[in-house]
Image (cartoon, rainbow, N blue to C red; front, side):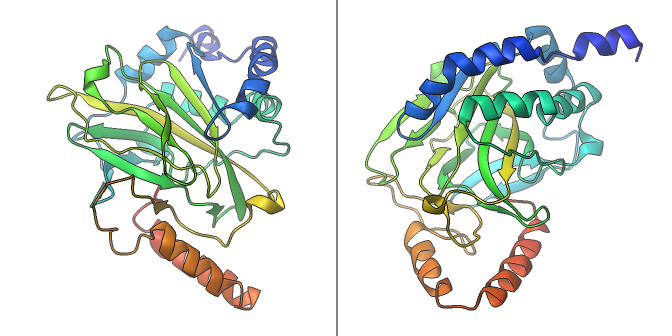
Length: 291
């Protein structure tokens, strides 16, 4: 690719990002039900159109498929199967410039990117797909870091309310959905992730046949986290909405099972907990993270 073409794809302006961080940092902290911000048109439409042009269909590459009572989605974090323009954008979102923006926006110091895109990368949901409300895995077994922040960038041109796929943000006690965010083109959602940040898109997608809900996912980490956010290492666990009836898939924990597991782990020697966490997550990684 010619140098001038590459220059046109380097889209991060530190001055503009600093202004955005200053403008939204108070909102990020104050938003309910947990810290988050929705930023529209963060990137040039022309860049994301190029990302969309090279976004693989469900048949183009080998996707990791999640299909059970809690989720029906496709994911791919294999860099060799991600297009060159998309890779360049992902590199920038893991860069010093963007990390500095995220730290200023969220007041989380010492953020670290994940070059392995664990649980992130390309996400795609076909008609009828869904992702039940869940709390995210909290520990990266390879980097041995605590997960602190999610970034979701949506790539859905012409998306309408009737198509569904809203990202729902729920209160920690699961009594109410505080916010529903439509996954429209060039919309970026950044939010804190702890055990008390339930989110998902639990309603089956109602987009036209042949359409899919496309997004990029990136997660950011720190070495340690505030004491009031700490819990034993765990994979994602799912929550039931009021009146919702479904069985948690085998191997995935609901909040009650997670609470029992946490109580047991408090009485287990730390060296045994570390060994168990490492082995369990290595096994899960064989079929991909559960984002």
